[in-house]
Image 1 (cartoon, rainbow, N blue to C red):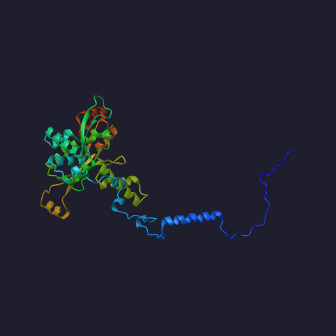
Image 2: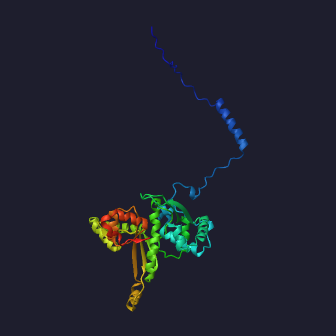
Image 3: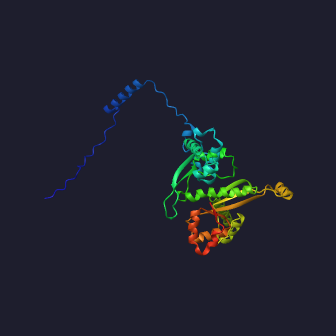
Length: 348
């Protein structure tokens, strides 16, 4: 037989007892404990809630934006303070020249610095570079030169770049115009040989400009030119989104006095801007009315990595083209049917 036994047995309801006026033993115990605690604490002091400082209030008010917040993020995080060991640092004329030349071209070989700044006094250059490295202003690296597929032994070249602190010191001590852009750090290690040759081509071109009376030379690398061209194209397209892109590029190319070949704006490795000398009284009067007359020369450095089509475009662009003797030989063998393209290539 199965018996279902409930889990809880219902209790019998009893009539509620009348409330007692005497405190229960538990309540009396609690009162005794509270009384003894009061005796130990002493007199009670009412708690006064003080206002919190404004800095602890919630929610916080948004901070006022400063000029630093309006800068691009890469500039906000960039260290702006010159190292203590470089503050008020007395630099020799050659050391200031090194900072200026390296800053303008981003990377320069020690061989070129020895020739142009130190008149081939290499030991003196090495002492100055050691001093500038110790102060955290330059970085000297030895890198592979041949990375463009050419055969033969891999060469090593020693190059100099500015640090962030060196960039700031160069800006203060170089005496260069404020619109002259300076660079720090190495961007493309695989192209360091080509980039270092730009300085050598510039020196050859600058000699020709100065021989003709040009002064106040300023350098624009392709980084700066590309940035300006992109901004100009964006502004034109924003003004008229329906406008043909080829027409916009053509207009921008004319604005920057650059060739437009096969639907593309041809940008040189570097542009040298300079002030032209006045030739006669009429030119002097024009200079006084409109400012000094300016000119520019565009230079391009070719390497063995250039393809024939790229070489043709550069030749049609009318740039002053330079190449080393070894690169020139390699390029000549690749364009057997277009030997005329090599006629105007100058040797570094």
